[in-house]
Image (cartoon, rainbow, N blue to C red; front, side, top):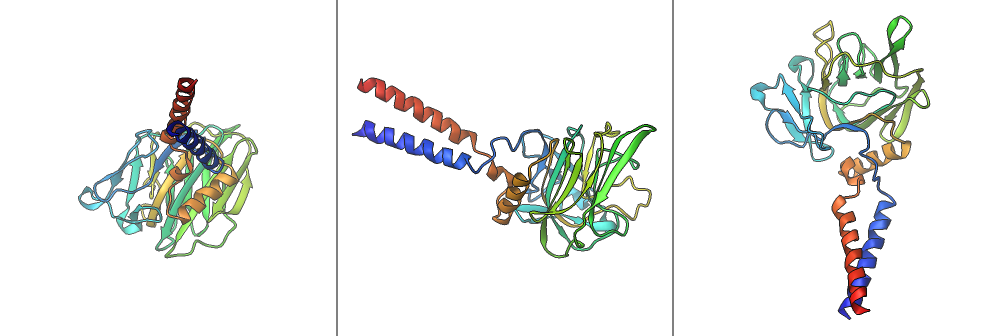
Length: 284
């Protein structure tokens, strides 16, 4: 009787895990270039959570203490806009070569000019510069591409309305080198696109800045005013299904890691299968 119950439990467990895997993404973390959930409650370090170890340092925060608070998913980091010039610097990250995806939850208290979400930029070009540019309140993306004359910059903006203030929004931008297409996403819906031809030019600087970009010529521009939460980068183009499910997970207060099957669960299934096999051999 005990052996039969163990066998039944093992098969039920395996079936449950298989059903779970059908709606999860075992490969979601493939080509991840960094993931910063901003769940800290104190200190001057934003820890990277995918296992790559690329922690970011908080810049221009008083006493080296971040303005940590409640986020859409756990905690978030508050950026003080032009007056404070807060940003997070990640010393290095894997640069895109043909494709890129950025995903983040943001809260805007105002829409300053050149408000940066994330940038790898030297003041002229780089692997990405994502935010609101000039007097345009829509999100835009700039990135360097090869050009017959040396370096060119491909760019485009959302076609959606201006970002509304005082509430959380999920933003994503996908550069798909296979389709030569850049797609903007907002709150799980397509929000604009533009065509580009080619690939990324090599990045001129190693670091990633989140929430601010200090290399702009006008020092009164370039900083996010509000909160940023759960920012992630990939060097591949995520599918529309992946983008939608990351958004839906966030609506339920769950991070993108909630979409990845836990290794311990898969290991448990294997061990259960081995146990069942041994018990069956013993009965024989």
